[in-house]
Image (cartoon, rainbow, N blue to C red; front, top):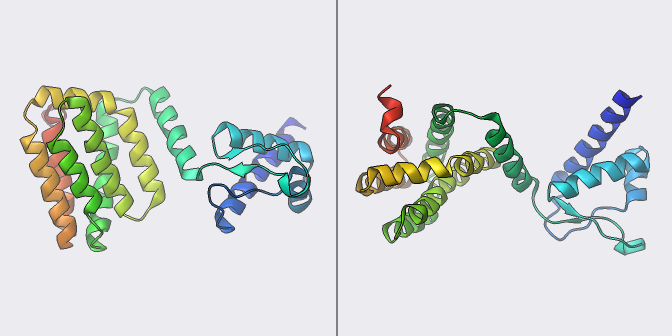
Length: 227
């Protein structure tokens, strides 16, 4: 009985998430009321209520009390934002080694930079992040703009899941990134790498973009490549 209840709840959650995507709902839109959802999905109201509670915990919806047109939870964020939070939590709890995170980031970011270059993506966000790093007064501030730069590459790939994973990886390794910048002291090499990556994407050179990403991570974490 418990197993059947779990399957029902998971099915309802999946159907609600599917509706959010397929109906093109955005922040501020309202989902159907609990009773209406139960009728549409052909499940009990308790299963709908439990699924909505999970979505509210994840920050995807905000429950509203009311009847008629005022009934139904309001969408408060896109599901990929909640996914980023969940991935960050799981990565933090997994106790992953820095090498594992960097290897994963290398694979993801090489792919993202390649896709961005092929699409000749807009590099305005990359340029803005580089300017922020140039003006940074501390390692923490530099890493803030550095994170924006690399997440912008993921965004430019056009794949939202890749972008969510990249944000999770960067948030998880923020402490290590600050230590790496402090250890290097001079960020000139990193900035040169950033400009090389940006110019490769702007020029539509996929191979150069991928090579530039690899060189950049080697410069940022030299100890990992010396092993």
